[in-house]
Image 1 (cartoon, rainbow, N blue to C red):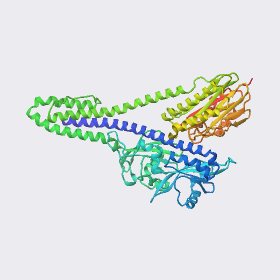
Image 2 (image 1 turned 60 degrees about the horizontal axis):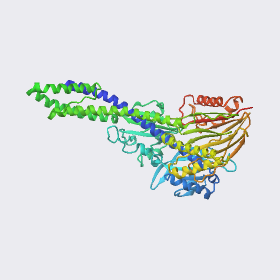
Image 3 (image 1 turned 90 degrees about the vertical axis):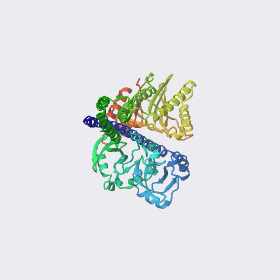
Image 4 (image 1 turned 45 degrees about the horizontal axis):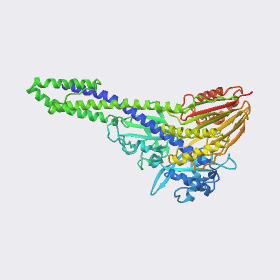
Length: 627
């Protein structure tokens, strides 16, 4: 019996260890993907918000009063961010919060690499230091170039905000997804790895930028924020250096890799957040195996006690006791073979009953661990259902009118996207729309449905009441005011290009709400249809102006989301608007709208060459057919 217990426990431990490690890895990978996507979406929202603010004429005026009228309403929406508007010479024009020693701040900003990069026309994130009370904290600084109102090619200043890294998890929402005191599979809190203190047990989630700086976004307070003040050289001289080196060597999306650091076995997972950031998830093997080892120790102790008592009982009443002992051995063997549904009757008193209870509890716990892994299949089915619902929002049959051709496609980056396109025929006219909601995932898809429904409703009323083309701007304004009034606190917004075309007159009227400027190909030239107007859902009472252009036979209008021109190659090179213009100019004029759309899609995919798609790609082509 002693041999049976020993072999059973060894086999049981081996099976439980393998399944627990596999289950923990799957859980950590899902958790890392969620954190990764939340931070990626937060970073994109920051870019879009700064870009939208930088387009405001009040900001571009570089006058204190007008700029403050924009920054003051924005500050309460994200009170952890300290907003600053700098002139190109480093003078502070406007700000939120308290700024001490402004002359010193102006000297420092002129030496800041992020400020210098923005003056060269590049949006960027930069890690710097900020004084919080009596201590120095790390700060994530976002810098957006501000172009001159009179000369759009000249950078007049920089709009930036400084977010203390100790507040990054709170601002981005990551603290709610994976903050302090998170429970492991056994229901016991799992601590954080603190290599700088010699603590290597627990888990860790951190971000590594391309320069080599560390950021710990899911840890509140100052336990880790001081590490972000280390230069890349000092990071590589710290106890975190082995993990940073491994993160750079492990291929992204390759799953968990088993590594040994300081004699401790870890599992490491790396995922690219953006061209600037790489997320790293760490968990040590002992933390994963702690529940099964704890259960096994309890089982071994129960078995040892039971074996001692049973041996004494066997000496007195061998025949009466041998059968229950044999049943216990069979149950342990069945559990070791993977049959966790074994249940022994707990009608025996004393130590034998405790043995049966221990065996039943162990089988139940192992079955629960197995069911947890299987339960995640439900999530996959829910995502598939959400994808099916979202596909129903995309118009299936594009309008067909004499004299024009319309073609479109939508390629989501993840399971659920937030772009959409729409087309609606009204007699001899056609309405076209392409839009992009900020962020990704189910929440953005829900807001996409709200934006789409409001725009569709507004266009329907416009068609039914036979309003003029001027109503296009009114529809966009009404949608913007509704979203600001009812959903402004969510910081969700959308960019959109909407147009009306009459084939009989050849007149195209359009409105742009912060969207990428469409391209009009006419012969050997390409024209960008720029129109001022902020994104919908950000500013109450925003004004949207109507643009007009006369189309001729053979002209092709190409409307797209930023996922097309921002598509990255394996070398991290964007497809760019210039490349799209060059591609249109090389196409033969006789190509149909379908052929133009398919060629653009093919060229973008070839540019990506297998690289990850980080944003939705949407494109619509309308071609005026030559008579």
